[in-house]
Amino acid sequence: MTFVKKARWAMMLGALALTLPIAGCPKKDDSSDKKDDDKKTDKKKSKDDDKESDGKKSKDDDKKKSKDGDDDDDKGGGDGKAYARGDVLKHMPKKCEMATIFIDVGGIAKEPAIKKNVGSLDDKLVQAMKGKDGEKAEEVLDILKKAKIDPGADIREIAMCMKGEKNFIIGIGGDFAGKDVLGTISKIGEKNGETMKKKDADGVSYIQGKDKVLLGMVTPNVFVATEDADDFGTLAKSNDVSSSWDVKEGRLVAIHGASKKDGVDSVTVELNEKSDAVELKIVAELSGKAAAQIKGDSDKIEAKAKEGLDQLAGQLKKGPLAAIADDLKATTLEIDGSKVTVTAKVSNKHLSDLIQTLVDAKESDLENIIPH
Image (cartoon, rainbow, N blue to C red; front, side):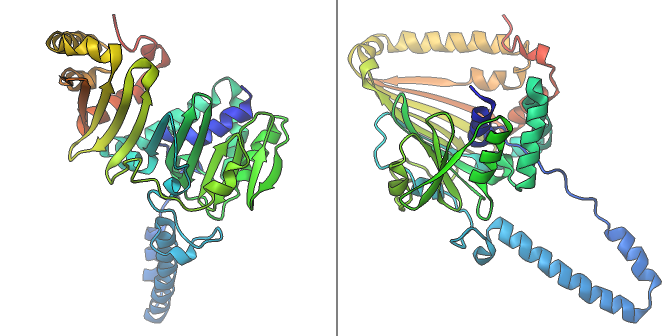
């Protein structure tokens, strides 16, 4: 896999690392110095300064509103609208025979345990990106910074429609309006000696490199990856699939699929926000041999699963995953006929402790993440 191809996938999926803006930390506040200067001036100048300060504050507030989506008219990119939750699902296919995947990247970033450690995660991610390709990674970061594109902060949602094992469409939605996403990816490609050809299909601009993947902007805030240019015309039209994908408020991850040849008629994976925790729930409907195997021995299977979880929790307590060992031990497995339900809940406190442990850990500590 070429470096540019890795960079594309990093832009699509790297946001799961939930980084802070790559551009850097906020500038130090110099308000205290300004106050000292104001005290030395006469009352008239002080009033003038106050008016000027109020005007500056008003402009800063306006900019903040625009960034947060409170003032849609100030958001650039052609349609004058800020990104709203679920916008990416307006540009996904109606039929996805194999599976649908939705990830609320912005929602995950706001989870208390993640938000508390996001700065450390950012540093860890940047160091990981450098690795053996340190120089190239630095160049990519520099290109993104100049383009004012920060995958960790800009990407809000990711959606994937799988029509088959090798046939899928990925949608990435976020705060891209007014930013040259395709041009930036092209520059990253050029750094690796690859020329990205810019084309147009049904009014949608897209780029293509050496591989078969095409990247196109269907709206100023949504771009999609596909291998068929004919998809762009259809995907550019608004078609909200959020209901059929079962994406509700507070649902951070939603996966729906099936593998009937393996006896799995349907499977649902959900990661939901709770008051003081995140809950993972997996529900599978089985058929054929798979269903027959669990119907007769449901009690034994549940007991064996509990025994296995107890053993695993004991092992985890000896390593870097110790913070969530007790949560894992409390995981439940229920069998009701041909239906299997697995529910796991991790408290925000334990998740926060886990993340901090992983951030502080050395690579050698993570090689044996589950002690034997």
